Amino acid sequence: MANDLMKSDFMLTARDAGQLSSDRNCVDFMVTEGDLALVSGHKNLVQAILNRLYSYLGELKDKPDYGSRLYQLIGGVNDRQAQLKAALYIRESLAAESRIKEVGDITIEKNEAGGANLLQLRVIIVPQGDEVALEIALPLNLEG
Image 1 (cartoon, rainbow, N blue to C red):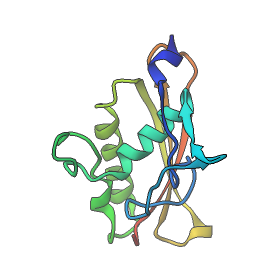
Image 2: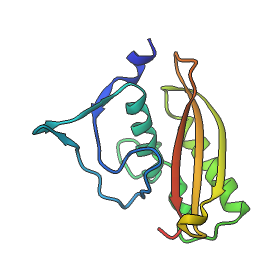
Image 3: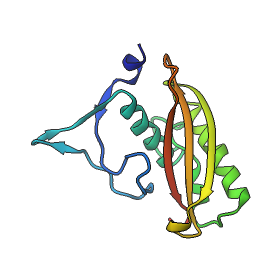
Image 4: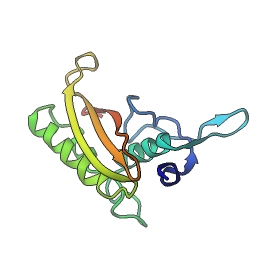
């Protein structure tokens, strides 16, 4: 049943969990053996979550509630307030995702290897119809 909820979609570039990305990275369709690649199951849910979080809230005219406010943190400082806002913005955005039963812990730490303005976010979610929690790594570069 859980897999039915996850469905399939076209696989996109620059949308792997843990991959340093930003809303400004060009996203394109992935091609495998001369054809469009598909992603399904939990990987499709992870890709959908990353797309939602990297999209500006209100950016899509026909879906004004789609996206997140994470972009509002770009250009700011990496302090406790920014980290708390990031967690809030993630929870707000993922509350609209019908395939998620629960958003669990969100941990945020500075990524010293990536510089002082790189936040390393880890989000635990439980998909609908599933008891297995997924961990999604989401690096967020405050420098843009």
